[in-house]
Image (cartoon, rainbow, N blue to C red):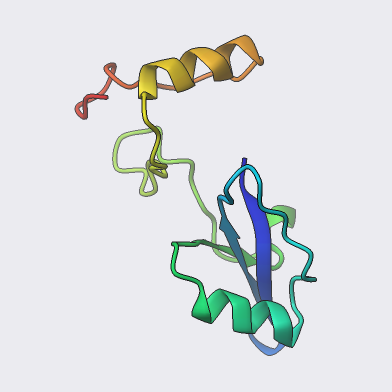
Length: 111
């Protein structure tokens, strides 16, 4: 899974940034997201982080809307995560109850 490693709040602009990463199985993350220590970790880490934006109010039907990317010209489409075997990973997720809009070979891009 992914671990939330940091967050940056911008209340004056009504949004929050969340940063997530995958950690090695034997590594734990004990910092509190939003602290200076977490900021320092984020900007000095050698791996990559996924940045997610929460525009406050969008969950209540106010302001700009976001779309899941599964319809024609719908914008956002997917997040790619590195894995040794995409087919085995999909099978494991399916067994855990995850449903897919498209599996690796069902769209234009192939696994």
